[in-house]
Length: 487
Image 1 (tube, rainbow, N blue to C red):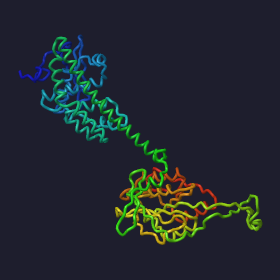
Image 2 (image 1 turned 30 degrees about the horizontal axis):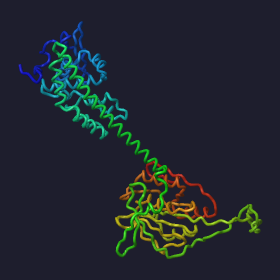
Image 3 (image 1 turned 45 degrees about the vertical axis):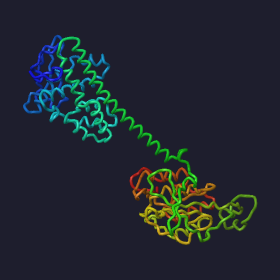
Image 4 (image 1 turned 135 degrees about the vertical axis):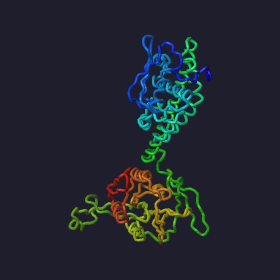
């Protein structure tokens, strides 16, 4: 009779001797059910009754595989696995999966085939593996299909790429075919022989298989928890950036300004380094400010309904609020950041309107294009002077965040900051980004910056601010699909 390693018989298990502590195998028909390996049940015997296995009696290759697999479970499974699991402190599901590995190895050795072909339904198991709270028993069940044709099919049904790779790696590292066959052959050689030594060898091999399975499950769960922890840390980091933690306080101009880029025959550009990634390469062009500012500067008197000395006595008859007293105030200036993308159509008339509304305003325009070393941010007004003409804007966004950060770094004495934009924020390669848009809106909220859709509203807003009023900051929607901005 042909022998394998450790004296394992090549014959089918029904031709072997009666198992110790068991009378004989008894087959119980269940009609056409079950139709999968998971439905095969084996009830082991004791000293009083025979053990039996339930399998379908229908004809066909799949049903024949099910009957043979059930027979193998009854021949090489543990007679009292509950006692074994309790004694070794091993979960019962792990022991059941170890028995499945032994039966699968024996099937390939004895019958020369794969018992999982046409006999498994992987959809329910894949659904459990795809769930957020995947139980360890599902991982062990999936790994019990290692080294069979069902395992690659199961991996294809798992939506999470990381979970697929984790299962594949642990199956290759802990449950290789050679390792499983080594312990399975030892079990088949000793499990049905009399003697305490044979029992010790059998239990030791089963415990080794269970340890391999538990290490595989623990490794998979550890990697999953590590990824979840990393994702939580990334989310917390994004929230800190949006919220404005100590690490992301308003930076000074010196920290934002990087190296100078000199180009032959063209103005020198200054690199602007933002606090987060995702933006286009930001280059600032400080244009020649050749024209004087058109807005009024310096102190001015504002009519008030109360005070110490009367200045505008004529207002007693002409002003409904009778604001005959005065208060001296200094113009607050302001910083205006202008989105000059194609949808905004910003030109010289818009700049004139802004300059007329505020004194000493600083105006920064931005628009990225396809020239990698070309300017995409322009300082067009500052300290009471402005440029004589605006540049030709490329028409994209790309550097919304760097422009806002640079504008905020120029802020002095709590000057008002106004962002003229439709809030259609894009990053590198002019790609729309909901995350970058949310960052810009949060940046404006935490620094008290105003957002207006055009130069008309910006001029009206700046005029009110110069008069000492405090307009309400408009809230914008975040984390929404599309651009429903003005609410």
